[in-house]
Every structure is written in structure tokens, then in C-alpha cells.
Image 1 (cartoon, rainbow, N blue to C red):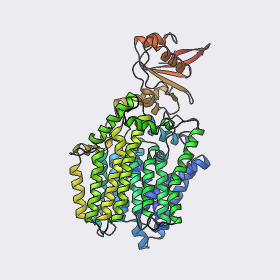
Image 2 (cartoon, rainbow, N blue to C red):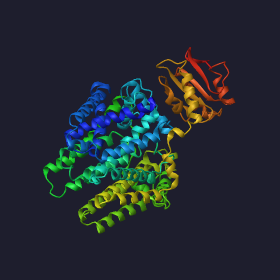
Image 3 (cartoon, rainbow, N blue to C red):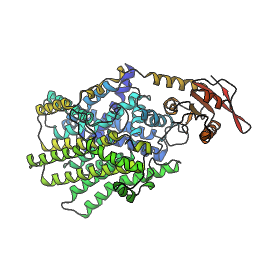
Image 4 (tube, rainbow, N blue to C red):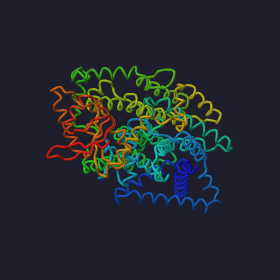
Amino acid sequence: MIELLKFALLPFLVFVTANFTLIYFSKRSFGTCMPITLLISVFLLFISQTIFKTFNIGILLLLIISVVGLGLLIVKRKNREYIERCFSIGFIGFLIAYILFVFIDYGRSFSLYDEFQHWGKMIKEMYRLDKFYLAEGNLLLNHHDYPPFVSIFEMLWCKLSLAYSEASATLAMHVLTYSMLVPVLLDRYFKDIERTALKILASISVLFICVFIILMFDMNIPSSFVSIYIDILMPVFYAYGIIVVLDKENIDTPFGFVSLLLIQSALILSKQMSIAFIMLIWLFYTLRMIPGISFKKVIKSLVVLAVPLLILVLWSRYVSQCGYRGQFDLSKISITGLINILRGVGTDAQVYTYYLYRGYLLRENLLNSYVPVSYFFMAVMFETILFILLVHKKNSFHKADFIRTTILYVVGTLGYLLTMYTLYMYCFSEEEMMILASYSRYMSSFTIGEALVILVLIFDSYKFSTKTLCIFMVVLIALTNWNMYRKLKPQRYNEISAENVRNKAIAEEIEKYTSEGDSIVFLSNSEEKDSFFIGYYLDYTKVDTKLSGYAIPSMEEEEYDRWSNVEKRIMANDYVYITETSDVLKLKMSVFTDDEITDDSLYKVEPDGGWAKLIKIY
């Protein structure tokens, strides 16, 4: 019970009471303020780390804000207007969503490759070091260049829960994701509901409408729905940015403008690919300001674009200063080359991939429903809905709204299509591009965002009663493929995989013999994949990943250079761990040791006159 309370209660109290502070000073409702409170909390830690080289000052400031909020709640308890804003329907929706995801996430363990390779390790390293995961002494295995926004929030959640845990990181991801939607939509479109029972019903309906839209459009296999992958969060951030622009009551106020800058900055500090969403939000904001254009509006538009781009430049410079490179080498990209590929002129792999990509856009299903819908037909479907809104809701969805939104969707659809085309042609390996690696996952990140924006526009145009809202929810659930329902299964009932148990046990055994700062390289007769999985569980031993994906080469003469590389990696590390042996491996390793080479064996590397000798530990 104590573990559950730490997992669920402490972070909830901190963020909710901190939100009470923002509610008081902004004079806005719970749902309007909650996304901003969460975003500000991350930027407090980011700025704290940037200036003071510690997250703790940012955490302290957040706790002070939280205590102030609690004090305000007590002092202003007889101020009916303030109390109603604090406990609006948005609060009810946030509470219900929170309970749902505590129920789902409690007891979860990581299961997906990227959670072990980098997302989870990023959180662990920041928790351990009290620094960004690029800092000296980090044990991160890959993707040091990735922006840290989401990982900072997950690390903060673990700090507030008083311990790092995979379940806490997952709950943090869900809270951040659905706080951008559920309380916001409820306080904006359903604030006039008076009866508590109807507020609860409306909150449940909006929550499950959002959940099942995401389930319907999330084509990442295995699903990222219950994980710390950020493929769902990015389109949700995008949808929230569009909500901010559509909010006529706030967008022209300092609160609305700061909200827009915060979400733009959060996007760019979450993932490099989010630049596409940033440009779309900026485009929509600029289109909205065109009527009655003025110098002040031009400056505001430029600021909305300039701030995230400046943050990207500063982060990229910091990554370079730490000695790391970006994920994609953009210098390879050629506009002329992209055009030539469309004409059939390029490498065989590029031309093949282009035709495959074109076919996927027309035919590959991107919808978890009973009717398959491709990227192209999804774009047609979204535009059809916009036209229906124009025809049936002229009084609320005007012609100018239709034109602006159509431009947003057309530019977004074509822009994202071209972005992925460019990445496949120049930024993926030939093996990856020729199978359109992660096609469904990448395209889902965009279509989820587009679907959520359509939902916002529907709420913006139609006045939904609670009954209609419930019917909408039931229809949406019925249209979603029933296989998606099991993704809502409580994670504590999932058994931890035998492989995870094995990897954790191996890591614990290794660190009985290694010291802080020691390095280790993993070898295997088959494709070496333990560097990341076992490496995630190592708490102070540095893993050499340069042989990750390697199989120990055969005795063929042409493999000499590859084996020479293996020898160099052995001599560059303090320990060697062999996971799988063979006769070839035993023969090759005999130059390093007289000890028997066995599966799952650890060896100490001892310098031996310009060579190395392996001393078997177990």
C-alpha cells in the first residue's frame, strides 16, 4: 500500500496544488492551466540544470509553488469563484484519467526495444547523475543527441515518487499526454454542465473518446500506447498547440501567447522530427492573424517560430560541445537527387524504395478499425469532414475557418509525406529504407495529430449534450478493432519476461566484480544484442556498444578486418562478457586466454605487453 501511495499520490498532490497557484494568478480554470503547469515544471528543471548544473533547484521551486497553491486553497476556501476554477469539470476529467492510468500502469516493466536502448536509460542517468544524460560519466548507450524534455518530466515524476521505477515513468508519460487533451477539452466545451453526475459522465466520455482515437490511429507494432515511446505524445502536443490557437478567449492575451511559446518550445525539446509540427502550428497561427495584419502581429508570428528554432540551435550546440553528433546527417540531402529519384534516376535501392513508398501511401492501412484506410485516403477523409462542417455549421465554422484549416491539412499532409520521403532516401540504411522501416509508426505520429484536431473542430462547431457525447464515445469504441481493447489491460497482470529477468540477473552478477568507471564489451557467436538489454540494468559499468549487432566473424580470410576490430574492442575495455559460444569463437578467443570459453561467462582484461590476457571470473 505504501508503494502504491508513493507511486500515485505524491506526484498528483504536487502538480495539482502547483496548478492551484497558476489558477489563482491567471484567473483561469483547472483544465486551461494544467498543461501549462506541467510544461513550466519541466522548464524549471531544464533552466535549473542549464544555469546551476543541478535539477534540484528547479524541483525546490516547483515544491514551493505547490506549497503556495496549497496555502491559497486554504486561505481562499471561501472564495467561491476561485474554488470553482480549481475544481472545475477539467479537474474531474484529470482525476478520472489519472485513476485510469494508475490502474493500468501500476506494476509495469519495460518491454520494448527503445525503452531499454535509450528512453529508459535517459531517465535513469538523469536520476543518477543529477545532470543531463550527455554529461561526463553518463552510461547512456545511444542517441545522446535526443532532446531531453520528456525524459526530464519522467525523471521529475520518479523524484516525486521517491524512487526510479519503470511504472512511474510510464504513468508520467500518460499524465503528460492526456493532460494536454482531457481537462482542456472539458473546461472549454463542457464547463456549463451543472450536475456532478453529468460532469463525471462527460469526463469519462471525453477521456475514452481521446483514448480510442489514439488506439484507432496508433499503428506502432508493438504498440507504444502503454510505453514511454513519445510517438503518441508528439501529435498530442501538436493538437494542443492547435487548441491554443483556436482558443479565441485566450490566444490574444499574454496567457495565450505564453502558452503557445511553451508548447512550441516543448515540441522542439522533445524530438527533432517535431519540427514538422512546429511549422504547422506556426502556419495556423499566422493564417489566423492575416485579417487585419499589423506590425505587432508580424512580430508575434516571427517570435512563435524563432523561439523554438533558437532552442534547437542552442541544444544542437550543447550536443556538439559534449562531443556527440545528431541522429541524421542532413548534409547528404540533395533536392536535385530527390527530384531525379521521382524520375527513376538514383541508386537501385532509392528507386525501389520510392515505388514502394508510393504504393504504401495509397494502399497501406493506417487505421485500427474494420475498414482499412491508407495515408492518402485518410487525407481525403479528413478533408471531407472539414467540408461537412462548412456545409452544416456555417454559423460556427465559417468559410475563412475552412480555408485556413484546409491549408493546414494540405500543407501538413504533403509536407509530412515529403519529409518521410527525404528521410528514407538519405537518412536510413539501405536495409531499412528498402522495407520502409517503421513506416506505420512514423505515419501514425502524424495521423493521430490530424484526427485529434478534427475532434477539436467538431467540438468547436457542435454543441454536444452529455447524452450525445456518450453516444459518440460508444460509436467510436465500436468502430475500433477489438484487439485494441487489450491494451488497456492492467500491467501488473503481465508477467515480467524471462529475458528481462535473465538480463537483470546478469547485470547484477557483473557488478559484483566491476567497479565504477569500468567498461565492458559483450561478444556473441550470433548477432550481439545484449549490450542494450543488459546495459540498461548496469548502474555504474560503462558498456561498449561498438560491437552491438555483431556476430563473431567466421574463420574466412575476408573476415580478417572484422575480427581485427573485435580484438581492438577487447583490448580497449576492462571486461568481456561472452553470451554465446561456438567452436569458431573458442578458437579465436584462445589467443587471449587458456581458460575455457563458455556461455554467459565474464572475463577480466589484463594488459600483457601490448596485448591483452583474459582472466576468467565465472
